[in-house]
Image (cartoon, rainbow, N blue to C red):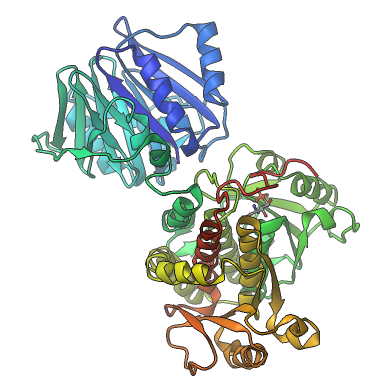
Length: 607
Ligand code: AGP
C-alpha cells in the first residue's frame, strides 16, 4: 500500500505535495518522491527513507518550483527501498506515481525489453511508465485506455505527460483514489487526509474513469473520452480520524483490511490454479527432498508458524518444528544443511528473530523469510524472501499481518504436498480454489460477528482472568487470542490445550470465570464439548466459538459465536477475525490505548 498525491493550482506544488505525503505516511514510508513541472520541464526528486530524507535531498539538488506536480510515499512490494526504486517513475514523456500491484508486470516488461526499452528499477511501476510511453502517440486518453487493457492487478495512477505540462491524469482499479475540488485548484490523493487541509469536497473516481486536472478545474471522462458527470462528496472527518480511514483506531482499520491483504498476498502467487513459491531455489525437486522444516519467530508471527506446522504436517507429511526465536538462539538447535528454516516476521527487524536467522544460516540450511517489509534486515539477510502484502501495519497488535502470514503458510503447505506427492494436482487445486475464496468469507465474518464481539467485550471487560481453550489449530488460535487480549486490554489470560485442563489448570476455573472455547475442528468437536462441560460444571462462563452447523445443546454455553462452513484447514483465517475483534472491543471498553498499548513497541529491535 502506498500513498499518492497530485496538485495543480496557484500554490507552490512542492509544499502542497510534501504536506499531503506527510498525511499519507501511514500508508507507506520506506521511500518518497515528487515530480513538479518547473519552468515547463518535469523535475523529479526522490529518495529512500522518510519524507525528511526527501527534503534533505531537495536541499542538495534544488527544490522544484511550479504549480503542478505529483508525489508518492512508498510501501515497497517489488524492489527493495532505494532511490532508484522510489516513485515517481519516468520514461521520456511520461512521469507517474502508482499505488497497487501490477500482477503481470513481468510479461509486460519482457515485451518492452524486446522493444528495446531500458529499465532502471526493479519495480512493477516503471513498467507502467514505459508501457504508457510506448502507447502514447499524442492522444493521452487513448494511450491510457490502451494501457488499462494491458495491465492486470491493482493500481491508482497519477500521470503527467511532458508535452502536457499543465495537466494531471488519474485512473484507478482496486486501489483507492479521490479527486479533491477547490475554487482555483484541484488534487488527487490515495486518501482524504492528504487534501483535508485544503478542501473536504471530492470526487470518488471509479474504475474505467479518467480524471483530467488542469488549471480550469477537473474533467472526468470514460475510456473513450466521453465526459462523465460526477457527484461531489463532502468529508466529515477530522484529520486524525481521516488517517485511520474513518476508523477510530488503526487496529480496527487493519482488521477490516484483512480481506484485501489476503487477496494481495494470495493472488499473485497462484498460477493455473496452483500455488507458486516466489523463490527459485525452492523448486519442486528441492521441496520433495525436504525431510524437516524449522519455523522460527516471535509472538504473533510464531503463532502463524503454529498454523504452518499444522498445515504442512497434515498436507505434506513433513515434520515441522516451531521455535520461539529467543529460545532457538540458545538451545544449540539441531539443523541439517538440507533442512528448510522459515523465518516469519511482520517488521523484518525483530532482534531475536534476526539473530535466529543468522544462527540458522551458519548451519547451511536454506533460510526463507516470510516478511511484510521489503528491504527489511530479515528480508535482506535470508537466502530467500516471500513477502506478505498486507501494507503497513501501524497498530502494535499484529492482525492483518498474522492472517497473511497464515495464508503464505497454506500456500507453502499446498505446494509442498504437490512436490511430495501426498496430494494430487487436482486435490491441491481444489484446496487452492477454496483458499482463494476465503478473503470474501473473512469479509462476511468480520461484518457478521462484530456485534457479538462487542457484546462479549461488554460482558468481559472487567474480568481479571480469562481462559482460551481449544484443540489442534483451535488451540493455536487460542494461544494467539490470549496474546491479543493480554497485550491490548491488559487482562490476564491463558490459553490451554483443552485436553490438558484436567491435568492441573482446571483448578483455576471457578464460578464466573470466563472461558472462550474454540471448537471448529470437526474431528475434535465432541472432545471439545466434553472439555467444555468440565469447565461449565465448575461455574465457568463459556463462550463457544463453533461452526454454524454444529449440533450442541444450549446448556453447554453462555454465549455462542458461529463460523460459516469452510474446511477445517482454513478455519484459522476466520477465527483470526474473532479473536482480534474480541480483543479490540475489550480494550476499547477498558479505555486502553488500543494502537499503542503500554510497554510495547511495534517492532522489538532489542533483545
Ligand atoms: C503482535 O500482536 C505482537 N505485538 C508481537 O508479538 C509481534 O508479533 C512480535 O513482536 C513479532 O514481531 P514481528 O512479526 O515484526 O517479528
